[in-house]
Length: 275
Image (cartoon, rainbow, N blue to C red; front, side):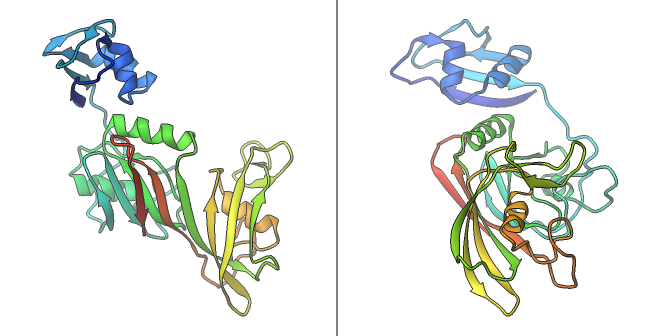
């Protein structure tokens, strides 16, 4: 069993029922349901979610242990940007998938993280980057932080900044692309801008112009699959050497997540991670 929650109740709103108390401390509906089958302890005694929590009470939550199947630990150098009891932030290199997948034999970030923690760790990547995209990846170190981080991401409280090299240079050096994105067809990984797609918004700014390409700062205001690649191609400036949305060439493909900010899952303080 894994202890995911341990706190002394000192809230002025007490007494209250256990379920409300857990929700108020950031546990999701899913985690509270799981806790029913693991263990909810009030002052050392197993209780149900109907138990009353009073000031000074100690509440502990245990969940059944999970395992990351099919992710053997590997001794791969890991560039750690930030770490505490709830979060591990790392700088993923290019040509490294975030997670194992069918048909992929490359070592992954997940293998490196499992090696870093010794093999018993459960790999919970909150954000993922494509194999050829480098930069900040946030990993939750326990179930409660994973739940809280995923929830804040869905609420739009995460902010992500990228650097990318694009073909040519936009005539408008700074702007916003607000264009819905959808799959070209079911089962196809490729996306396109389409009226019936999901809302997608991207801010861009040209940082440096070169002879036939530009370096841009790109901020995602939504998080659609391939959003940067689709949107930059949509305005006529695909990422350089993008085989899917542009033209593959000998030039180096470059897309890097340089900054992510989000509320800390425990304190709600805004954390800024830079790579």
